[in-house]
Length: 313
Length: 317
Image (cartoon, rainbow over all chains, first blue to last red; front, side, top):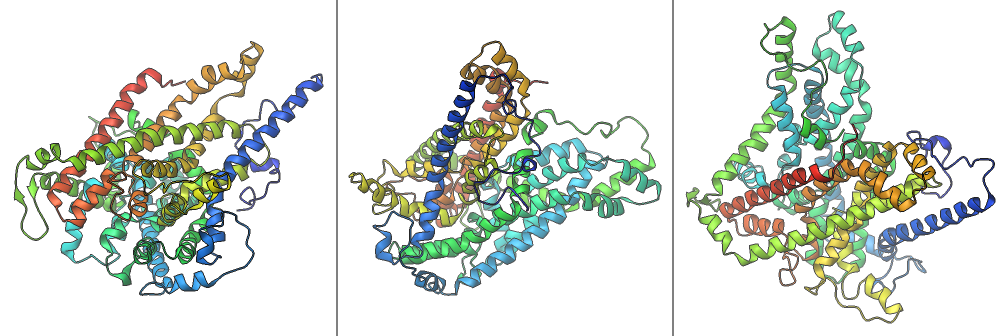
């Protein structure tokens, strides 16, 4: 990520918005009156003020949470400001050790699940996407429509039998129920995203490779995969963020504190402390949000592109 | 471009549609074999993780099952029970309120901000990041914890209100305002639809606006006569998607209410009630029936959306 993500209010270089249609209003016609120039400046200032106010209201709670995590507990209840006079880091050490395991265990568990899900989505979804985008096969239309429909299927309609199934295999309190569905390409959103991407890759190179005797495995592995890296990056980042935040599945399948991922650990933390220790609760909340925030900074370009083309959240 | 349009037309890329009524060539049967391999994980998942469990859950909806004994067939008992289950009715009211208030507010804000951001302005990337960030964090437990504090009786909101001399109530401990606090959290995540609106606004040719202003059309009439009609497919897309997602909201209500849906069931979302039924009381048969009800409701909403779209969604091409 080179530009445009840094949180600085400087005007972005012209190249920062490559996909824009040239704005209609920007080049002022030479003979235009000064009054309309002044009007435009006023309007632009008003716009910025409005945006800064709305943006400020949105971000303020986050800033306040960060500030509060660095304050003693009794001050959190009466200090709405975000400026710090002292730096209280004990919330972090207290929070880290508040549960039966150090918080690092939960971070590690989450990382394992996330890694498994990323690998699953990358491999399984890209394979399926190649078939949908490049192969002619029987029932393709039906299969494709089914795939699209599963995107919109509420997860709850399968969760009860899935739970029964996985508990009978003995997978409760393992990470398998969280990872195996991804290995089987059930995140059809990503299939769709990749299909869209592959359709945009010219078929000339496939043809050339085919004439040279390459099979589908080689065309997929050596031509298509390297060219769809942006789609793979989008998939990776979204999978990372969604899996990292995923609460419902973890709540159902992970009941052993040693196996907790970060969201269920946080929930256990809330239950254990009630509302008496917001400071350490906030501290661990921030620890849990930090990876998402970093993923956002690093991958913003892919996130924005991914949403704009497929409408995922 | 979008899942919705794709689904509506179910088009396949040109020249690649399966050919019927013709002798299969060697290439085609090779494609069939290759497709079977490339799609094998997906097919396993489709039947093993999605369709199989769906059918199973439909069966369970007609049974009494608690994981201990074998499922016992009870016919339509679960559905009859739904008719007289007041907590379920309440959870539907809560969920509908959340969806019907939260989604329009969220989309209106998303569109408003996207309109302000659309012209090639300074700091665009910065603003976009600021507005987008909450929608990535919004579904996390951490933010739900933050919300629980902010809208608590000694929370940030009341601290700020105190500065201007107002004694606030415990927003999440009062049944009248608890749901509203969670709806605000939903509105807070307007960034994702905003990005989709931004992309859509860029597709509208600038010359339409130029022509309109030459003809003397003001900003407001430009909005209603150019922006809204040309953006209507995107609005429709956002609406369908956000409604489907909002019906499934769970984490925020769970954390804010400590898993209980309180106070007085005022944040008892349908999904939360489903969770309590299935995984709190292990009343799996009833939970499966509820899951199917949710599917039918979401399906109905989507269908209504599609039908209504004929009257207000305008496709340019």
